[in-house]
Length: 317
Image (cartoon, rainbow, N blue to C red; front, top):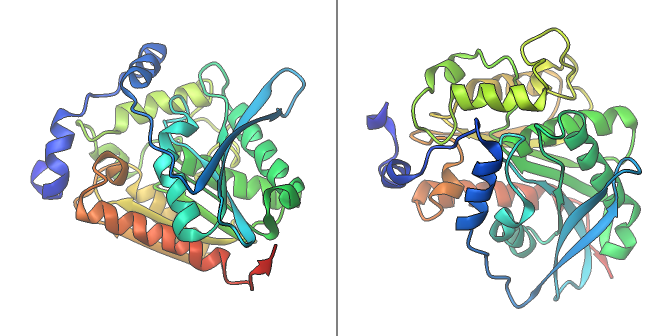
């Protein structure tokens, strides 16, 4: 399979350390130790805000990105970070969230949801819903138009995005105008041709996927007890979901579950835009951001967010 990898993506993959999900805490600590904080641009305000979580036992941190130059009511975008449901933090997407502010002209709120295995489903999803509801409830304070709300995330963040879209639809609040589950982790059964095909060092593979789902679903993955809110590939009814943008690399284990999800959305009458990137493994655009295909992918999904969220007329502040 190596000969199929985009030439600009090969070198970094060769030196990228494999993830160890048998030692989740050590992996988290190792990632934190090598993380380099992204610079915050002068014209962007980044604020950490702590709100009440979905129950009385914990609080929930939100990381809010706004432009100092905002002159009108902007759309709002809830961003959900990836990490296999067990890794990651909002700060890891500081560059991308600022890109959404700059290029898509929106206010971005990134949610620091609880992670498995300490907090399996439904805790991470309920954290995301609590964050989204808070954004909608505080739209005036944030300078957001509550009729132009979107949700987005990559990998497990994409899985939570797809699940959150279903949950929000069924709870009837708030109303979403856009969802963007990028190469989403949505099928706990881990048995599509692409998930079985990708077994080597490709950032994410069949074995890592199995371990991530086992921790998120507390060992129930692959059983008959998994609801659509836990794994959106399980959903039979995708009607009533908002305009959807998604993409996936052809060498990503999530290729086929993404393709199946797109097909089901289309058949349910949901407007969908979809891109498949040949030669690209999981998370390619964040692993090698300088590659031409990475820059094209980011431009395309940021532009999609801008296009959908700004279809309504802007409102002066």
